[in-house]
Length: 200
Image (cartoon, rainbow, N blue to C red):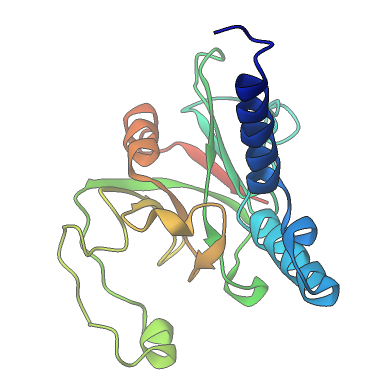
């Protein structure tokens, strides 16, 4: 069958038109113009809220050396950067960040403990805000710390994994920095007790 055949041309036109409709924004598909503008705006806001502003950074503006390696948690861009002590290893991960500014802590700390298969106890302030939460969650798929956790010198603060992947790229934590389980597993292997950490 020739590509100039009328049936082939009609079929191509139909497929192209269908693709255009499916790919078009809600604004172009709606019947009610006022309603569709709101849908388009809400979709855009949701997508922006769940995206990390990814860009590679250099370590020098943030750390005086790479002794023991360095972790930078950028709360505004929702990204975690790691530089190895060798100066050649660099990793960039999307992260979840605290829900609000009053739950956010910024400044310098360090990794004081590494735990594979962490258990979790909500802090007293978490239990006050959420009295229905359990007082203890053992390691496993229901644990909000995921598969690995880096405990920081600040009480209750950690860089950890999560089994709820919807949280990554969002303001969703009670103060900690969350990573995909595969990313925290990699960061866990790269970092050590004594790795310097900066939250900005």
